[in-house]
Structure formats: structure tokens, C-alpha cells
Image (tube, rainbow over all chains, first blue to last red; front, side, top):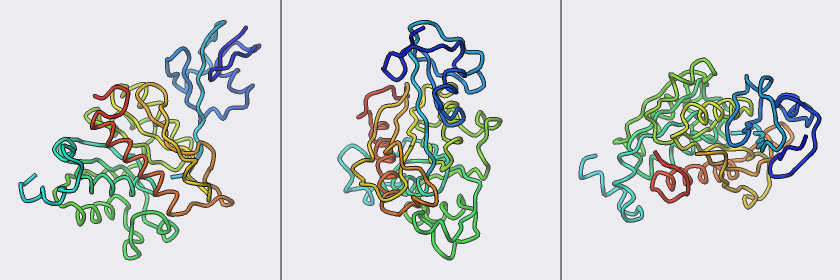
Length: 65
Length: 211
């Protein structure tokens, strides 16, 4: 299926948000994710099932402050 | 605030002080970002703030954090309260000496705050707080920071709109680690941009929902 990640369309072979984030090597604990505009709780990444055309926004924080 | 206090803010842009004096802000973390943000807001005449931090002032903090050598060993929230009181004795300060974790966010991150400043140093804590605020405090504007370490140009530190009612300050890349280090000027720049973005949000000058 195709999803739109941070504005760019890409083909992916995953079912859940957690699989997507892991496959794309995002650090799950540092990343804020929304699917179709809805922020997804970190605990729900594994049960968040993606559908064709979903718009995923992922933003990873870096440390320092 | 008593009428005599007004002269301290007479150089603020017209119409600013009256609005800021009614505002309550929450600052999560009192390190390089939080201590600088708190001082900027105190000088601008913000009415009240809650500062949350669980750490003590250490010698290695003093290259960029707004504490003094004679405050080493004090809880940061206590030291910051002293310093803020010298700048603006009329500022109402509530301090919370606790580590913010998923289990206590709901209690510590008050729903009555009018803006939340994410001033943590740890990336996981930043993501955790941002997630909590966007999910459970969706109406309260959130200003986060990501990327302020090292010696990169201050020009690379930007403010951009994040998800929903949030803003992100930083270069997005320069992580705090032993190779990068952190220097006063760049940390203060990021903190000033964070505080200024917050002031603009409180005054209704930034796009996005304001509570």
C-alpha cells in the first residue's frame, strides 16, 4: 500500500504504525507521530493499523536543553 | 500588580504588559532552556508561572543556565525562584520539584496553564510531554525545542509550526552529546526564541488556536 509520510508518498509493506516506524528506523521513544492529523499515543503504535493513503507525520526530537 | 510596578515595564511594546500580567504559563524543566525562558518571561511582565524541575544546580550547568556559583547544590526550582524574585518581585511563582513522567503528567501539567513550554534536555522526555500535551491538553499552546547543541549558526535555529496547537524551535539536528557540547549563546538564543514565540502566542500574534 501507499502512505504519505511527511508529505512524500511511499510504498510500504507494513500493517501497523509500529512496523512502519521500526522499518524506517525512527527511534520510537523520541518520535511524535500523527496519522491523518490524529496524534497517536506511543503505547498505541503497535495497535494502530495503517490503511492505503494514510497521511503519517513523524517528528523525532533530539536531546538538549 | 500594584500601580508602582508598572514603571518597570514602561519600555514594553504598548498594550503588551496589561495582557501578559493576566497570563499563567507552565515551564517544564529549569535547565538551559527553562531558566532562560523563565527570566525572559519575568522581565516581560508575565503574571504567574509554574516551574517544574527535579534537579539540583551543578557546576557544569553554569556555562548556560541562569544560576550562580553560590547556588550550586540547591534545587533548581528554588534557585530560580530566588533569581526571578529579584527580577520581578510581583511575579507569582509556583514551583514543583518533581520529575515529570507519564504517570504524573495529568496532575502536574495543569489544565489551567495558558501556554506550556517544553524545556527538557532528554529527547524521550520531550516526545513524551509533547504527546501528552497534544492528546490531553490539546487546547493549550505548546512550544517545544529540538536542536540547540554545538556551535552551528544561530541562523539555523528556526521556529516552525508543529502538529496541531504546537510550535517547534531549533535546528532539528544538533543533539546534546559530548562531541557537540552546549554553549551559552546558542542555548540562550533558542530559549529567547522559545519565550518570544510564547509571548507572541499569548498576545494572539501567532497563527493557531489560543485558549
